[in-house]
Length: 614
Image (cartoon, rainbow, N blue to C red; front, side, top):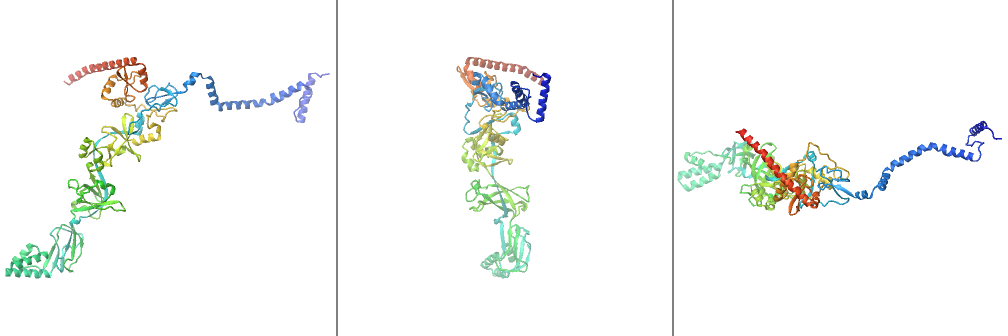
């Protein structure tokens, strides 16, 4: 007989207590068959695995998060229509600024604010080839121009000279050196110039020499006078002249009949004693040197010039080129740094030193107040006129340039504007406001302006009146090298993941100078086209101001010239010629009416101002 519910409860309890006592897993002993199977299924599947459900859910969530991009891509692929799939093969770009590329046409160009054009991905716009001589072309936003401190300078003719600088030593002028020697044997009774370095003047007494030969010669002169023998008198006068007695002294001897047996030795020049060889009481022979004198009214400076500069110096034998006056030279010394001394090139040595690869040249300078002291050093500067520089005289063929070259004027650019790459010399020219072109130029030798600024003569590549970058040119060049994609396109305020340049924001404090850009763009048209473009003023397709996006594009519609703001508008104008011509006619009529209105308004104002002036 089956026990009641209470008995079952008691049995289960006894079974569980037995389970606890045995320490294992056992189904209740009163369960049989399917009841026991259900018990094990509930215990194993529904009870023990329930605690793992939370961990499994967390694992599933983690896998979904990690593979979210893949799942989203599959979802887009399964749910996208065929039209949308075809549209993903296109992209949108700015025709004026190819670096601006977007995936949709909901944006506008952040530089010129014109709508973006569509093209297939991988298909690049046919870029206009750069003219010969232009290595790159770049465009900067106003903010970046201010940030880089870019400044421009108009190319013009400036007075220049080619300077050759050298350091030399001050020396005595050898033509002003004299040696005073004894003309007869005798004894030095007195020295008037008794110190080395003593200043003397021409005719001053230097020494008093007792000479026995003088005594005998004077006696012969007096005897010849008494006898009246003119021949012996002339012979005696000649011997006294050789002994240093001048005609005045000889006449005094003949008149008075008295003489002094000592000869006064006079200084032949004004200068100073650089060597004294005798002392008082010393006996000397005929021809013995007594003094070495030097005239310091002029001095020499001998300096070394590199052989690279020898082509700039005269080659004639007398070394007095340029109308015989010699090349002008300016010298400064360390002792008198604020004073300049003027002179000329007087001699070029005929050989080159093999060790230093220099040639010694000599300059002769006036020495007022003997300020230039021999033995000192001086820095000399040779100034050569542009017409005497062989590289300029042979390279300049234009008639106007040759005329101004004779006046010392040369078409030149400042040193700060030149980028020397080693194989090229590049100058950045401003073709339009914010647009700069790297021009490969041919330059002459380094020259100096009137204020000491350094210039390079332009032999080829630039013309007078063009504006070039002087300050900030290195930054413009560095930008094109760091970003090669910008070297042949425009760049500046563009953003997005597909932009070829970095993101830059234009600040309101640095707006673009649109009027200047329009004037520069219209100036690149022919005179006839410029008149038509100025009369039209506006693009009939986009309504933009002509010249605000670069030089206007000219198209012919039914024999009429129509100007567009950019190449993007060309196809639209060709597709709707009549509509485009009607808009152009309306634009020109509106421009004429506006001009007449402005002139009408300005008339009364002028009359009022004139009446008020009266």
